[in-house]
Image (cartoon, rainbow, N blue to C red):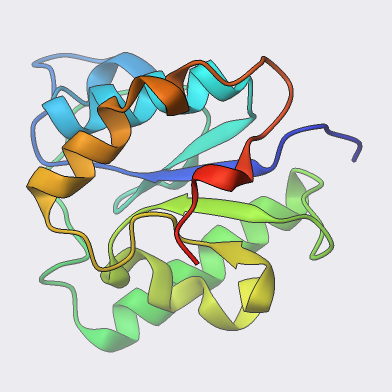
Length: 155
């Protein structure tokens, strides 16, 4: 699969709209809205990491649900990770492209062995307030379309 920007995986959030709609619009928290704006400003392909559905494309229509990896037992999180990896492979995402994760450790860890060193976690270690600030930084939101700007990532 050819692409000019790395694939982005964005974690789902608890706050959702009240009825079925596109995944890009279903998740209602300020964090998710900023993450979506950031990814779309990059011109990057992206998916939502859904605790219920696994990998969800932004245009997939889904209903609101109440499930989180935060309280899921470790064995269920591993099974979720295997499902997401299968979905990524089915959609043509090989292990040779970098993947940007806008997600907490509970969503990253089940994917870690498949992702390996190509995983980029630009907000690792940041609290929610600093993540919101990071996502709102206008220098990150003005990256040219179809080109991913990695200079803004902490090392």
